Length: 264
Ligand SMILES: Nc1ncnc2c1ncn2[C@@H]1O[C@H](COP(=O)(O)OP(=O)(O)OP(=O)(O)O)[C@@H](O)[C@H]1O
Image (cartoon, rainbow, N blue to C red; front, side):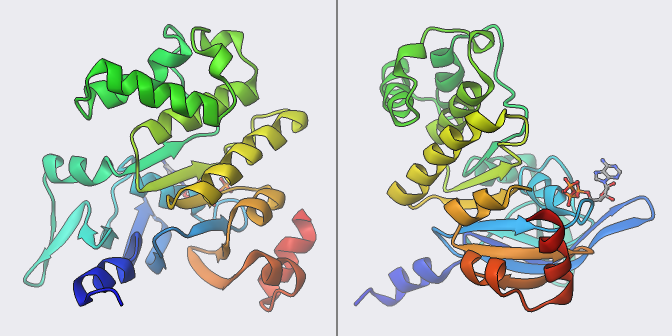
């Protein structure tokens, strides 16, 4: 039996949105959004274009600032906290400590073009986490093996295919040993024949680590293969959630049915 303290740690969600509001001018994209992602879950957000999926990931990377509500990571308030009944912004230092636990992989890889593959991976562990170079290189070599690119460690990103670059970007995100990995349309810029390799790497990470994944994708195959829970998002709200099998074979909500008819 876990002790009560351990049980608490297990039960604390990796991510919690509590009444989160996000507006762009007059456009209220999230209007009091509540949802949680349990530790170790691999959750895919699906839904129509413009429904606010990417905005959720950008809030979690502090690339956008919320206008209301609270976001928690591992139970800790992230960008804002309540002091009495006042919602106040947390300091850059406090945010930075939480952000460190969150890694992100983007559609456009975003590798440093003037660095080798290895240098791309060791940069943040050395400069952000303060690791000695030897430790960062060890970790990077292990990760390159995991993503099947050990022979490319001294190559430049421009010498790699899109799929290989994306696998380097995944290794780079993993090098920071994040608790949470955010994946935003990571296969969208890839030729179809390269998608399978990237999916394979992510499935492998999902199966062999307890990293929490929050995935935004238009590829339903991705949702099926990598995630264990799917949230259908529409108009800034979650309108249905289920395991992939259930949501893809027997969705209940009419909007989900309509959306899936259009994309499957
Ligand atoms: N920086 C911004 N400035 C103004 N409006 C924005 C900005 N970013 C997003 N929006 C708007 O917020 C809404 C939600 O966008 P978001 O990218 O989160 O949707 P999405 O569900 O990820 O869409 P897609 O599936 O097309 O990527 C859209 O109406 C979009 O136009």
